Length: 434
Image (tube, rainbow, N blue to C red; front, top):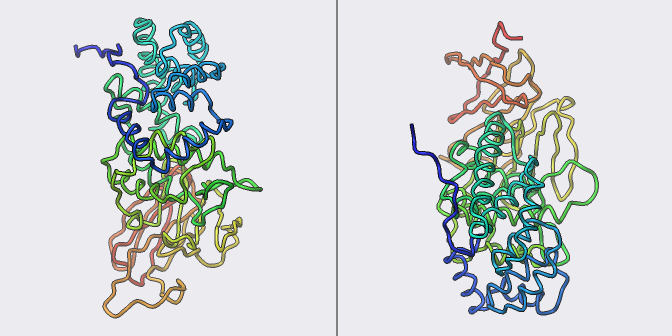
């Protein structure tokens, strides 16, 4: 039998986020009067009504050493378990222990990510005050909730909702820092793709806000974008990079985050900017990334013509298409399109059980400048949408052997040609399938 895992927390306070290296960085940021510190300090000193006041006051106290702000944090904490755990851990408020345990136990049957993250924060913070309760709570979160429920959900094609991604990474950080466990291990592919998915699911154009410019994530509703969601999405990306700053995907994301015009300056976002941003961490330019992301697990397709802000953006989301061009969003009826939709070197066309496409389409068709002498034609990708999900198809290109491909959960069939040439490709659903 293998050795049983230990869910006892042995780390010293502060156990939530402010491990020694992170706390040293924040104090250096204050000494250097960085742009993030100056904005945070201005809001707190100016008594601006912070969106998460207990969190903000406690972080300010830890950075400055001024305990008066911990008193303010305790008065402002309310019934939010997450903020209670932070104040208990950072400000040493033992009188809050029973409240924290009761609030965490009330969430023990909750299935959502923010509830699990708040419970994990409470369990880590309470490691010394009630070691047995802390250990039992951590074991329940890791074994029953994460490994028993969330890992199978992700493996079966599920995705964490974008608004919950920040809580997800707060959970990952707390578990790693206090139990030395990387919860990503069973689903590494999902987490590897997550930074790229975030980048390619934003509309290309910047959106002017009252305090700063925003990147706006794709949305299907009418009306103006949700700036709180946009801010929370960026905060999640800051935490992603903080969790794993060595991955190539994280370094590309870091270069995206370093553009100060998008720095969150409001009473919600500045706390996360100051806590998680590391302007000294180098990034790799995101311009080298592909302009296409096929999210097979959710059945979504994201395309953009370039990485510039005037690019054309297209998304196919479970039967519905949307294009963003010249600053405007518009729905696209895929079935009504007489020609393939061309975005860069990718083509989207409505699929059928039996059909034919012609690859190697001309530069004139694509609407770009002609290739320079000696310049090679880039790789070409076709996406056949609207097909039955998880279904096999036989693919037969001219003068090549037939091969088999399968649609994803959203009914998208991807055909990729590294050295495209003008040819006909015959596609038919593999016989014998429903």
